[in-house]
Length: 362
Image (cartoon, rainbow, N blue to C red; front, side, top):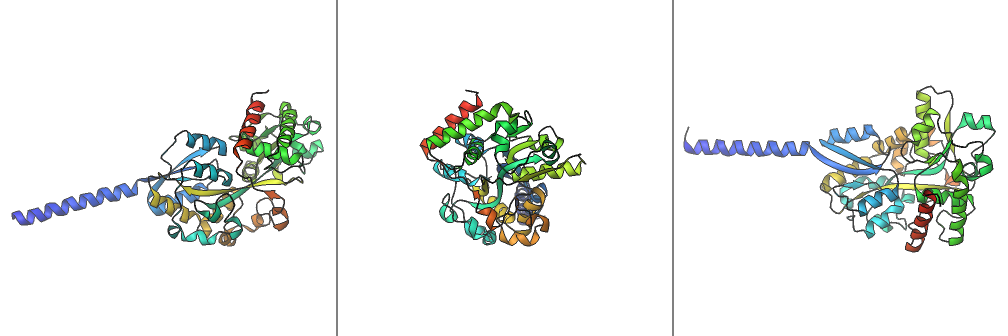
């Protein structure tokens, strides 16, 4: 073989090797997602991995405060974060987000405009919503019927006279924004109140209820409700839906359900954001666009029972879930739902102090 031919062959072999390494790198590229527990359908994630020849690493948080503390403490390496909307302003203030390249996310056109352009992210510069949950009372319907109790009011969680029948059978989220907001609503106030006197009322209501609660629990309350250890939870609609599904699938001798409360409920939209230091921004945009595809967006509702801001996904959502006011609230129900706002620094400090005092039993 001549030197010239051998040189060409050698160059070709080097090129093929480099192409192979590049292909291997692409095949094993990781997308790092920081998200809520039980927030994304495993089937949808697996389908994205197959379509994009990548691997998705999911890291979980149980509350927005936990996520913010971890990120403010220097946690890095995430491509996509899935915050509740009220956490987005804090992420922006921390300088952690990059403005979205919306040309890379054409499926954003599928989102219901009612869920866009909120005061928390005007113009959706940084975020796009993908689901919503309602903070409500989930309960063991069989046990409550036996006790002659109903879940139409937040009094089931906060009134000591009702809780006397439920001692040790109630858990609430380990989340100050959600629990204090629910207590504020129980006392007839907005869950976004910044009035110090109203906050003291909410704190007093929580303190009176504390002896009857079993735990602050955001991690395992689905299972505790499913197996019958807990009868009442202050939790998220999608989690209670999952508990009810698990109870039916395991043929429990009771049913798990949820209801809206007459004093009003919180509605929290969760969004996709891309971090400023994302190791794989192109893959992050591809993931968001994939998740906003109607049939994929619908899977969040069909599999997990989360509400859906994706208007185009309705054609793929099961009719029974579209008819459920907890999962797909109508206009009347939505008028009684309140999204949490970003608190001013004074109120945020007051809420944090109140929560710390409550948790340590002062």
